[in-house]
Length: 103
Image (cartoon, rainbow, N blue to C red; front, top):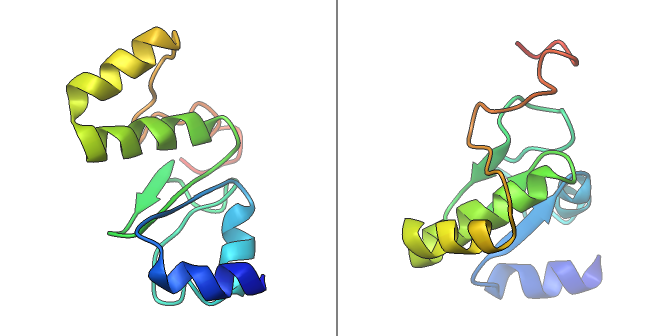
């Protein structure tokens, strides 16, 4: 926790997946910011200028894709997804939303 509290304010970006946002929240770094966690919110990916968060573990791959697209553009992100044989899910593509009563 102390490491996050010390380094977080100066970090260019912070990415968190699943319940990692609960840990990040306890440091105060999410105060006043939107974030998501494992089925706490419908959105698969929430992003601010600095902090990006995703819901469950496999949504972390979609977070990585979205972040790569943000940094480098759609072409390189699509190339990386193709190399990994990854099916990219965008915002609103949550196959578990109905299961958890979120839609």
